[in-house]
Length: 463
Ligand code: ADP
Image (cartoon, rainbow, N blue to C red; front, side, top):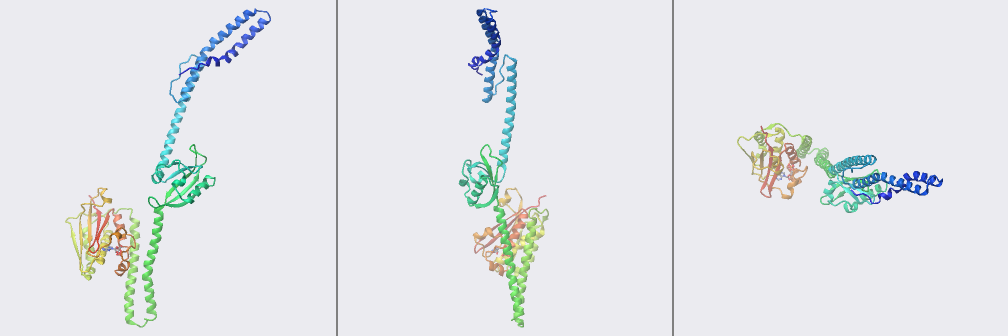
């Protein structure tokens, strides 16, 4: 703490003010001849000196107070000085209380700022605060994760180049109400966003005048597209046999009316087409029912060995027609899987049915069921114990590029072949959804010209 050297000069007005009444008395007394001029001068000197002596502690205290106030304002946390006069001591105490109150207010403000920053960063959607010049004054964690770390101070054009979005930001910054724009970014991967630009109530301390929030609508758009594709595919699949049926009915009503041989042949085809429609409708209903329940895992215990035997028996006639043989190799005492018999039967029914359809005539279909030694990554990380069921055929196999799409609805490697063989294109989609509901996994390995192996992993019903 330092005292000001100019303080005595600063006290001169106070000294003058306090001495003036006494000095006036001396002047009047000297002028009226009541006292001698020399005595008046002596009296005046004594009066001024005494007043100066009285004022001195106040002056020193004021200097200390000024230094104390300076220390506080420069952020130093110093105790109040020890002062000589009560008035100055009172002021020093008041100053120290003021400083304490200010500090606690400051701490509260800092906490509030920290809270708002955490809140800003924890929002999952990318957020940008923009100033009047369309520069980013702040960007949250989600924005930095997508658009890079050094966003602060950058012009919005350098971050997002979409012209409609930039126009919308300009409009809002020039005082128009908030608006939204949809746009796509292609890097690093294609994503679609809905951007909302809203004006802020007044410019913030950082100059922020508008907030830009981005909402990732990629999944939503894809789902919309998938739904549209699905409806188009399903209608197309139904329309084809329906058109054939109508065609044959017209022919039977017209030119082939009296042709018994043609009628028998056409009726056979019509039966096949109607059966195809019926299978398709059944598969569609099945798929939507499974999808509806997919989020809840089944709780029952399923005897997989028994189910495999029943499904294989049911397909025996079909296998015999193609001179094929289904061989079952089930580990002894195979524990039950967590699941529902009829749903698991659908998995094996579809896989064996495909093996029969796409396997070469006269070949075998090998089915192996055992406790799985290694699990696909999606199951391995949960420490699950599971059993595996392998369905291996000796057919033409599936080219590598088709493997990722096999479980898509209506995906077929060869559409004509699948239709000829009575396929709906939904079998593996049903398998995938049932496996998902059972919290299992499926892998496909295939060698062109040699055959395919579909392996389903199902968690064991423990306990
Ligand atoms: P589909 O009713 O057409 O058989 P799926 O969904 O069961 O429909 O199968 C989709 C496509 O996957 C089939 O059309 C076929 O091209 C291919 N596929 C399925 N299983 C096999 C298999 N075991 N061998 C060769 N291709 C297969």
